Amino acid sequence: MKNFRIALLPGDGIGPEVIDETVKILDRVADLCGFSCTGETYSVGAGEYLKSGEALPQEVLEKCAECDAILLGAMGLPSVRLPGGVELTPQLDIREQLDLYKGLRPIKLYHESDTPLKGYKQCEIDIMLVRENTEGLFSERTKIADFEADKATDVMLISRKGADRICRAAFDEARKRRKHVTLVDKANVLPSMAYLRHIFDEVAKEYPDVDTERQYIDAMALFLVQRPGDFDVLVTENMFGDILSDLLAGIVGGMGMAPSADIGDKYAVFQPSHGTAPSIAGQNLANPIATILSAAMMLDWLDTEETRAGAAMIYRAVEIVFENPANRTSDMGGKLSTTEMGALIDGELGKK
Ligand code: ATP
Image 1: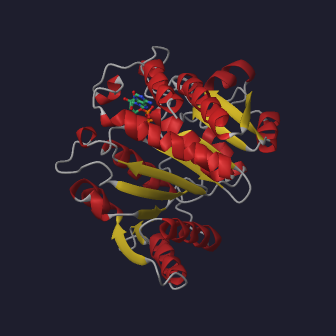
Image 2: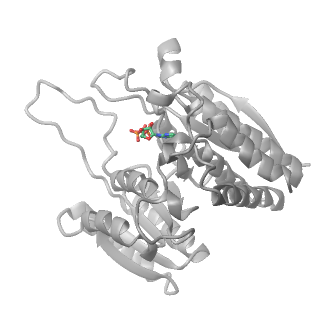
Image 3: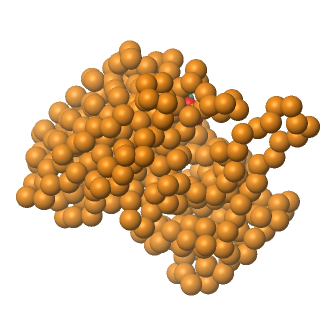
């Protein structure tokens, strides 16, 4: 039986709570599908920074890189800041150091009662956001702002290599889905975005079977609220992707419903799109679904017959549990705790 070593990085805030539920689900589908997972838990995040002075110790990153995949909860706390005022973001350091350029953020509506938009039924919102993870407007994020200076700048870096590989990733995703890619940019104003569009157009020629569309980020924010059902794969730079992923989460029930995968050519990290939600941490209130769905993405990425079967089981179990609108945690207007939601998904899997 194939065993997978999974690095578990629960992190801060609600991270440990959502990881605990997800590990139970992983163990369950591993049992059902004939594989096993050995979790190796490491301390990374604001808590680790307070203990050791390092949010992401180098030896931990090396251990993570030895594992088959990395499952992360959430990291950073508003009260723990670096000199210069920004929060600790070891999850971004991991993406950059392991070159996890492909940020996949699937968004799916599981039940019509979960969207604030009128007229959308189950599965009528089904979008894959492909976010560039290693450059864009985050390219100089580790600089320290000089509060005494007259100005501060950030650089929007679009490299040929970075643009080319993220556009290809989007087209490859589209081929697995409804074969439609929308580039989201600001090519009417920013030269870096005109460059991104030029490279997108070049790559598009190699995928004649995939339909393409180009939209400006501001218009896209409008269209995602007005007619999200018209979109399949979106591809964009780092910062625009960061913002759009929260907007997208908002139209299917909130951050607790938004899984993600950060994938490179060799390594991958799977984590919910949400942050540490400090105001609800430690209270058994967090919605674990985004993390559970991220684990399903991990099983798909591990790409054996058994793990793919496990992923399909998780997706199906979430669909069935969400058919009943009473089965919701408090962020979605329900009464279930984190552990009760985890138990419902686990119970559904147990029926198989
Ligand atoms: P970050 O910048 O680290 O991604 P953020 O500023 O986007 O974090 P989050 O921590 O994601 O903030 O929280 C945004 C809002 O969503 C908060 O009100 C938080 O309580 C809520 N929230 C986030 N994740 C969950 C979850 N899993 N369950 C319930 N509520 C959540």
